[in-house]
Length: 335
Image (tube, rainbow, N blue to C red; front, side, top):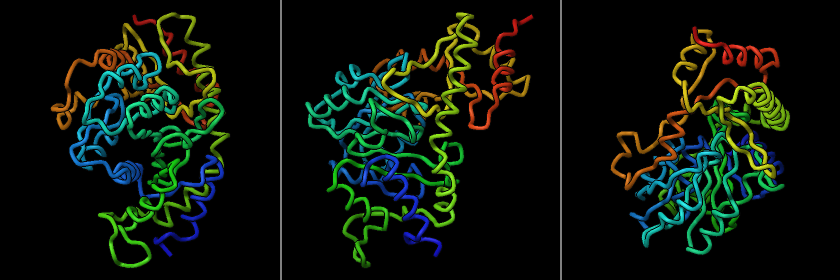
């Protein structure tokens, strides 16, 4: 069995459900597939607006457009890097049907406030949790809050299937639609109930996912240790700002970003010259040619963060001495 919901795919779903504490979780071929199918399952009218952060991977915005909806950008909180609830509320129009928020680098959004806004305005609440498997919001796992929440299991994630994704929902009526949507729209026969697609995860990918999913707690703990070591070492210089994590939350730290109000480009060049990889992450969506038409106003906080951010190495097997080496290079003064 290489596809069609084999033993490994079922085991992967079972283990995800048990870990997240949510019985409504499905495995699919990628997080992009999860986003597209998740939005489709909400059954909102074509042309509807979805409020979305511009500081996210382009897949978040792609999924909105693939469904025939229009993205409407709302600016971010420059400290958390996540979408700002106040900006979301101001962006709502009569055409708005959903809020699509990203847990940037695994840092949970202000879920409580976004839920309040969604409920008051009768909107769906969707979370792109691609980075956030293993993250916790006020004592509960991310994956137990949104109408739709999606996780990535691509090669760079803490749980990897090579390629793969998970869809979670808190609404039982949605899960049956998702089951059909990921299987061509079929329900045990060859009669499409919905316009679906082949979103099934292969057994090869699911098998790899089963091998890595059990290590999530160890991975998250180690990444938080690395992040703490970075902060402790770098904060004394006063030149850096770090992503704010709510004390009642836990981030998975898929990436570790530092903000440099001055000298980001010089530091990037210095680290790269020492074979230390960096990323300017994310290129804002409203800067991208494909999405430029959807920008309706200034997004100064997103622009500011992107102009200052630099992601430095963080991975499960990173040793303390490697962390210290990165900090040493960062602390070297330019000649």
